[in-house]
Length: 266
Image (tube, rainbow, N blue to C red; front, top):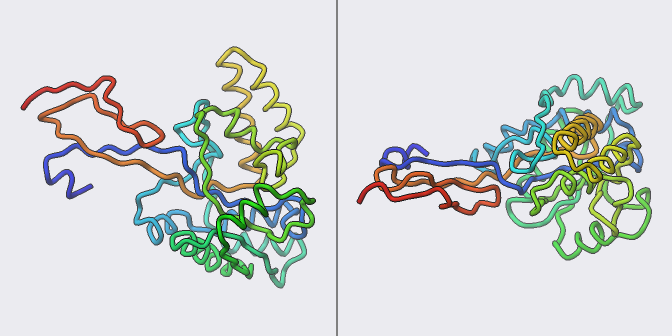
């Protein structure tokens, strides 16, 4: 950004739709315990992850939705607290630690991200067995998996996901209890009756104010249940010459918008 500004250009940045999600299996073994999931969530320094892996080009996730999705409701950020994480694990019966299996795709950035998570969780007493796998294997054994949640081979799964419709029904509704794989993309096998009620209510409501109310509560519930952690949001950047154009913006999918743009000089 400093180089862009030094060149006399105006930088632009906007939250996108793609999110690096950390899914936690809520129906299997240790991670079925809310305390273990919370311990995982508060053991990762997401800002440091952004710096180390993404060169500070991404943005911290502050809700299951991104600001580019309608009815976004910002949540209170998780603190990074390895001491509290160890306390939670002890309360859950894992005072001596535990070992979890993490699945991730095997491209360079995803491998670096998974290794960072492994190192962070180790500080809370969680040993992570990182398994980096081909995208086709993950699609078959996560997206298209038809077995039971208890029989899955992973405890933690890291993968990017985006919602092209930019609507909260799709962004949040994917975690409704009827959307387990392979029917949908409720990868953490999350079940919460009140959350399901809110998703149904939001889909049925025609009043935007009511929809906003339903989806705000849904975002609060799932944020605090820890079935999934939105680690980082892909941010889109660009620049324009203010001496030549004005009104140029970046949209949530990264495209440049010239709807209100115009030339102001030569």
